[in-house]
Length: 231
Picture 1 (cartoon, rainbow, N blue to C red):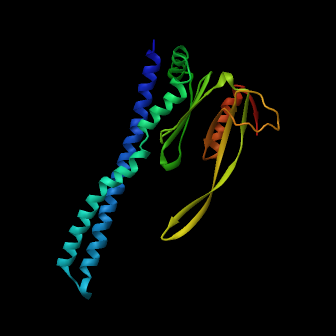
Picture 2: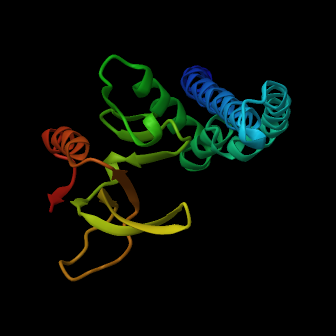
Picture 3: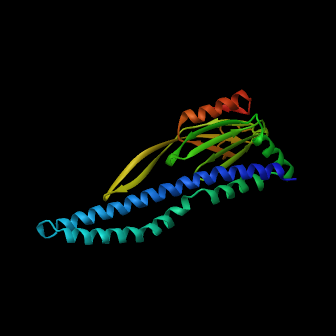
């Protein structure tokens, strides 16, 4: 009964597992660079200690740096583990698909996603992770390598709207507060008709970091005559 959905879900697990392996490789890379940084900095301090060339001090400090770096590595993995996408992605798919569609509709959804007519748009998004939008005649699914997923039932869509949102991101570096303005390009899906003045929350939302990625998706939906598209 669930052959298509199980097959499609396995395919998605393979995709997100590949994304998670990349996250782990990046974590190892940054961890090893951190260890190397400790070794070099502490080695240089040891070398120049007491105002002269101190080889013994350099070697002692390099060992201390190596030990400190090795101790820190497990904490780096603990801190970055919440960003690994596999577990989150499967939970998102359950929330967006398994908890919403009936068993019969899940099979139809998976059958369309596995078919030859699915339209695929992919790009490298935030944190250099792949993002994809998959569009069939009845469904649109946006997924990211960060483990997020949003599914739209296109047969229910009455209106599609787009917008531009700007917000300020505050970060700290070397004790200084840095404020940067970020821009996102959302696409709103409404499962009901609204008046021009109606500000009700949309039923589904796709968010894009680049306008051109959103426009590529909007072009396909417009060709399919999905909803009333407005800017």
